[in-house]
Image (cartoon, rainbow, N blue to C red; front, side):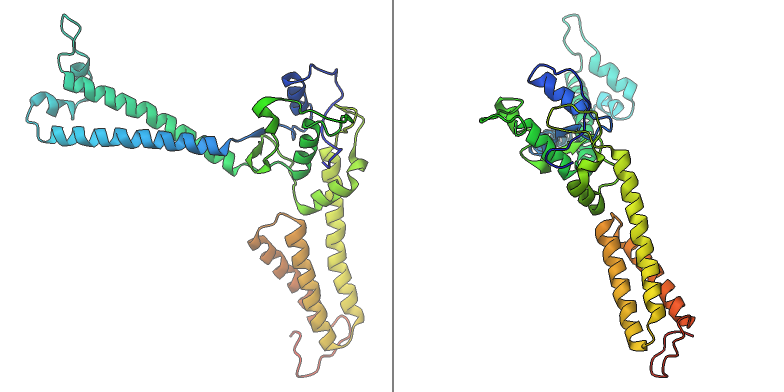
Length: 309
């Protein structure tokens, strides 16, 4: 989405504030506007607190183990080998509801506290890892949502954000945002088409007077067709040009030029990884070399230039 194009359906205007923002986030049928803050700094601080607390509990556990290591008490020895005995001794109370074995009760409380904090720490780590590895929302979607959230499309002289207080900075830091769902294709070609030709993908559904819904399916179809056309041009364009060129040195230069152009196209217009770019480029250059080697263009290279078998 660009600044004035975003996803959503036309519905009854809700109450300003949280109801309206909630409707906006949920109005997109493709759910690409479900953007929220990750609170990276707070999450990291929370993990540090849990880690520090666990470090203190770990130190307490080590001191308790060192103390029990020097003990010759049969109860202590049994508690380190039999959980049922450990639990029995630790929870046993006298008539005054006091622990019969206070040391074992203390050990059990420590073990249960470690268990609780460790579970909380691991869960927080796993959730934070998932959020950090999640795909970032599309920049066009973030720009459109920020513009709407800050009232940039309201036409007022002094627009106000949809939420006040500290929530007014919700979309200020794009690096702290996470989208619960992102479009399947977020490559540079999709972004280019969306930024420059987004109006052609607008549908009749509209959540605001100044915004339009962008059909993700239509956009994906156009991107797929455009990619296919570009691939055909790179393949048949190179073969055609090589067919009409008879200078062997020019052919070598054209082979290098078309190969570089293909590699740049794959690397910049798609989300292909480096190994995929290398593999596709090698396959493309192999096709061109086979074409030239077959002498289909009627080229007879001199003895100093070997183009094939």
